[in-house]
View 1 (cartoon, one colour):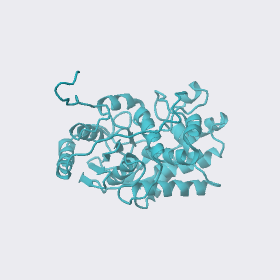
View 2: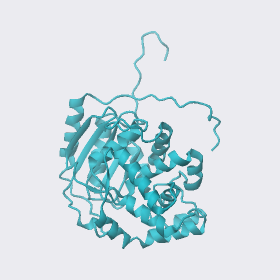
View 3: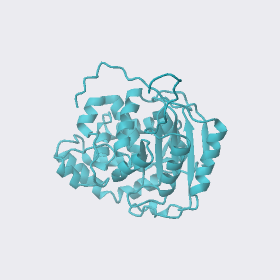
View 4: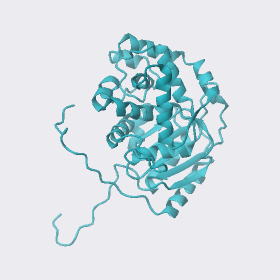
Amino acid sequence: MQLGVGDVSQEVSTGDLPEWNEVDSLVEAAYRRYRAVGDGAVAEYIPALAEADPDRFGVCVVGVDGGVHASGDTRVEFSIQSISKAFVYALACQELGHELVRERVGVNNSGAAFNSVIAIELNDGHPMNPMVNAGALATTALVPGASADERWDAILTGLSEFAGRPLELDDGVHRSESESNQRNRAIAQLLASYGRVALDPDEVVDVYTKQCSLKVDAQDLAVMGATLADGGVNPLTGRRVVPPGVCRDTLAVLSATGLYERSGEWLFEIGLPAKSGVAGGIVSIAPGKCGIGVFSPLLDSAGNSIRGQRATAYLSRVLGLNIFASAAHSRQKGIRR
């Protein structure tokens, strides 16, 4: 899309979160409001995830000022799964740039399931977007490195910087997924046949499986989201992880594709860029304000945490986070309307 604005600087205008005590109170309210919800089921197609405790539930908001507001099981670790796609995409954009990654991976919603093979064929081998498995594999293959080990080290280091602490691989989840990821291996081979993956497809799948098997908790997700919300600076460490333009690109893609085929419904009802994972995590981002991390393993049919969706929807409303919401501007008397 040619818009003729390449020489125009991106200006930013955002608001603030409510006062500290109010945010604390509302995060606690979100947790209490939905902790008894028992709808959904844990992911069973990955054996290690089938063992998840369905009663776990945590809600965390981290402001761009570094304030942490948490309730429930926010320090219980789980595997990051597909949420990793958002942050690996950011790392790839940082290294290779806006145009190249958009051309190679795409930014449009496929309208199909996250692990669809048909969507690849219908689009002449194009992955369509980085939040479905085909696009995520293509993105992982773009991470610079002379070997699979170097690419993995770059991803591990980068996601740890987003979280503000060293992340670790869950070996059990990695083994479990490696034994049941035949579909991803088939997708990688198909992408290679179309020239979308130039590396060994099996090596790409292994690095991708590792990135999905990293251990995080709800607070980590909130910090990672807050880093994207604050123009790429981690609010806890103060270190820049990615440039502001990369954050903008990543949030735009998440808005369109972060909740799989339910992305349109999510944006319509909740109004925040977000990414979910089948271990039960969801990260949401309010630009200039905060990141929200939620965790509950009970999922809907699309693979999104049910309690997590409800808690995020509540917080979006009560904290004024919906990026599409507005109120009439107060005007002085005598000014024509």
